[in-house]
Image (cartoon, rainbow, N blue to C red; front, side, top):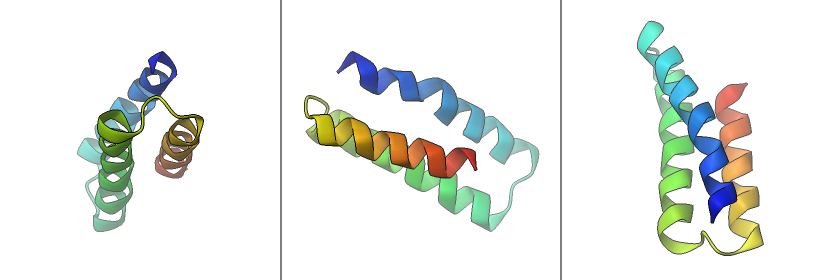
Length: 63
């Protein structure tokens, strides 16, 4: 569960970038990354697959 929180700085960074230049594509990417994090926090934080899903969401938001 603790490894899930390593994604938070990247998600906050994505949110800050979205606030600097708000576009529809960035809104969709950052929104999906946050949604992925919240779903995994709520339902699958203890599984190893959940951590991989959050890592995928964060890497998509960072690129």
